[in-house]
Image (cartoon, rainbow, N blue to C red; front, side, top):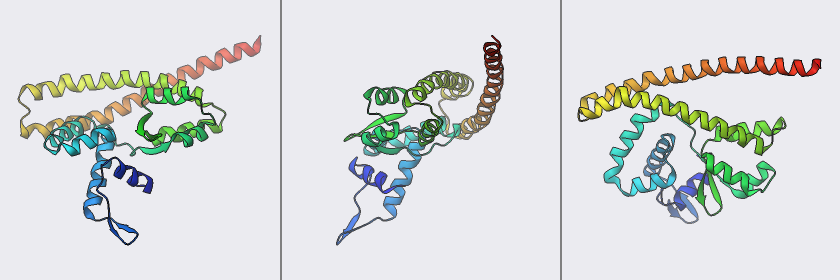
Length: 225
């Protein structure tokens, strides 16, 4: 947890201010508990604005959190988003072209945070983008590929969630969501998680092998002419 993120949470009303003694702010167990809750909700896919609303409406947050965690958490934890300024983005991309930021927002890679700052939803994707720049891939090219990946990933995610909803959730919901069956729902998701990841990884490997072979044949044919 960076100092920047702690201050950002405070500025958004997510975290109570520290106890100030002199010129030093002291954080206690209640701050730690709140930070852990925020990180957990972010890992479940909640935006900071939604977290703020849920924390304000504590009466509704428990049900929303329970449903979201039952549905999302088993598919893998994500790093908490990082807060980055527009100036830092321009420096990273070596460009202040607003179209780059607009595309990143459209893809869900970035989310507006306010005051000229943005949430970097996946620091892993940010690191991948930086590595691509090292080997000569421009931000425009990286975002174009990211757009294609997002489109296919959305389709795959919908397919697996449709499978879960039809086979597990709808029968559970039709039965009135009995308390004793929540573990059964969670277990089904836990079993689906590795199956989805392993199937996707295996299918991607087959696709990459086939695509690489076709590309090499095309390049070889071009060099023979």
